[in-house]
Length: 136
Image (tube, rainbow, N blue to C red; front, side, top):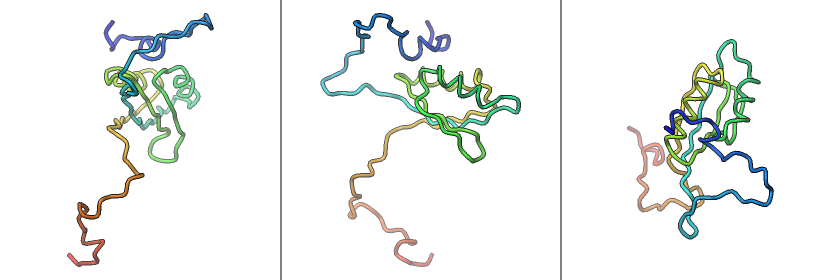
C-alpha cells in the first residue's frame, strides 16, 4: 500500500499483540547500530473552532507522535514526530494538518543533534568582531 494511503496502524507501530508470550518482530540492523529515525518539530496553530482536546486526543492515537507541549507564542503547541522513514514522517505531518483541527502546521525537520559535550577547537574557530571588541 502506498505510504500516502496508509492508516495510522500501518504507518506506526504494529497492532497490539494479544498474546503476551509472543515478541513482535523487529527489523534487524548491524551489530550495535541503531535504526535511523526521522524526526520533526511541528509548530501548530489550532483553527478557531477546534478545541485543544481534539488535538490531544488525535496525538494520543498517532503512532508517530512522541511528545507535545502547549506553548505561549504565535502558535498554540509544538509536536515532536518520529518515524522510520521520511515518507511516513511527511504523511504524519500532512495528517496533522488534515485531521487534527489544525489551521497552521509548520514542520521543522531535524537533521542531527548538536554535540554540546565536546569543546570547540580554538584553532578552527574564527574570532568575530563582536568577541574581540573591534569596531566595524
